[in-house]
Each structure stands twice: as structure tokens, then as C-alpha cells.
Image (cartoon, rainbow, N blue to C red; front, side, top):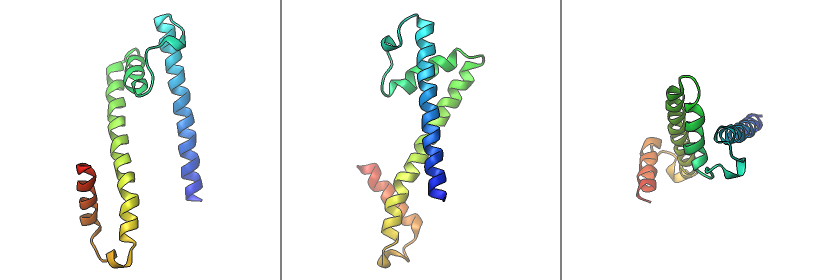
Length: 116
């Protein structure tokens, strides 16, 4: 049940965010007076180009932009945890590694990932 709730919540959140991005693109195109196809943002610049412009046009916009980048920072930290947790669990579930401290193995994997 937990996997279904998490998967469904993640999917719903992704759909809502996708709709918000397209709405922001439409709003930005309207402000610039150009068609949506001609808005100069695509790929990664959707986040770093569109959102700051749209949030900057809101009342108190500089605070919304700060919250956006703080949110992106937290997203990166969360992604790092999830990327590290899967191999860590696989390694520590082996019989010969069950008594090895989890924090040491997490440190080793983090250093190896940093070197790569």
C-alpha cells in the first residue's frame, strides 16, 4: 500500500508541476507578446529561466525566487539521499556485511561517488 501511495503521489505531483510549468510559459509568452513556441526557454532553462521571471513578477517576488532556489537545493539533497540509499541497502543486506556500520559504508559510497 505504501508503494502505491508514494508512486501515486509522485505522479500526481509531477502532473501538477508540469501543468504549472506550461501555465508559466504561457504567462511569460503573454507578457512578452510572442507565441509560446518562441519563448526562449527549454530544457533546464525552464527552471532557471522561466520560474525566476514568473515569480519575480509576483508581489514580493524576490522572496519567492529565494524559496524556489532553496527548494531546488533541498531537491538535490533528497536526490542524493535516494541515489545513495539503494546501493547502500543492497551492499549491507549481504551476509558478510550485516555487521558493518551503516554510516561507514555510506561515507565510503559518498566518497566514491564524489570521485566519479
